[in-house]
Image (cartoon, rainbow, N blue to C red; front, side, top):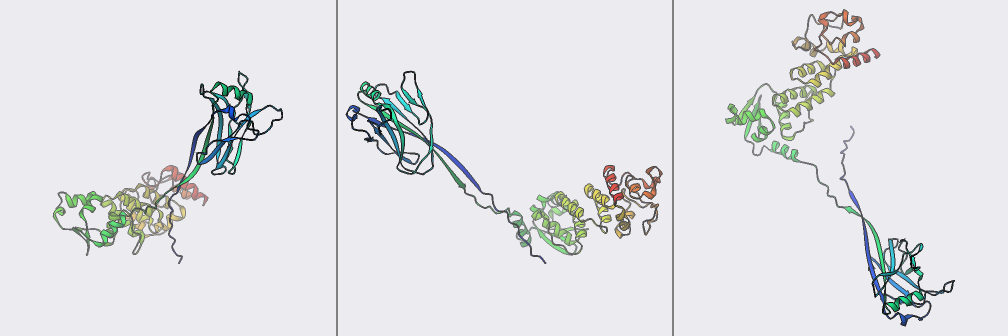
Length: 419
């Protein structure tokens, strides 16, 4: 016997990608530029360290330039040095120069293409979009502003100006969202335990020779019939013990289990088809529609030659349309109807006097034609061609009230012919 396997569904997990753009600026104020002019090529003055978006920086300003230019024209230079921070972080940056007089940017540089404004001043305007390098790496502009232009600007602004460095740091991180595994609902287990323990039971139910303890409010909540019995004008509402006739104790035990747990016990004693047939009757009696549909579904999946006739009677008596159609579809097969007609269940079916199928004459011990058995006219002549076309069928053999629809019957008949 193979070991059973318990399937376990793991809880869902979630993670979130969080992107953030952090922009900051540092103003490096240069005073007394005339005193710095001539300090020498490659000499610089530095700003204080500043941190933006977790990255530390420093500005270096070269009054006489960082190095000689090919055209021998003197320029000032500006570089910013990356001191520390995560390597590979995306950044954009720009540098502007403001005079003290009007606080307007005189020259704005972005690493990239050169442009000229209407006054002839060189302006670098392009995004510097890059990744942070290894710490203690610098980059910037050798030709920031011509020295001659810088002297003019300083003289016009009390020998002062401000170098403004703006940097935007793009940060991305992924956070795992904490998840807590919540156990599945267990209310049905609590009610099953309450039924088993019988604690707080306030009503006794006698079925046959057995007694069952239950809780009035549970029964009344689940079944309108029990509600009327226990809390209505019926005499049972004042009794501590009620008696149920016409039901086997095993059937009522299964019914009671469903009332408390909303599920069907899979433990069967004896023939499981008969057990479910009886449970369907009990479910219909006490207005438990979900239980009735569960029983219908199981009986549909368990239809066989021995049980189809009794199941058909049951379906007709309790108006189970889908179950009835399933039984008729099963019986419509040529190699099925004959064996079905030999069963005790079919004999009971023909003697029951039910509208869908009644005996019009002696029931043959074996399927011999013509068979005085009412079936849907669309099925019988095609399943049994020996009867001839529909117009030649005896009227007694034609009963539109029985069997599947004509469309389904035609499909069934085609399958019969193919078989």
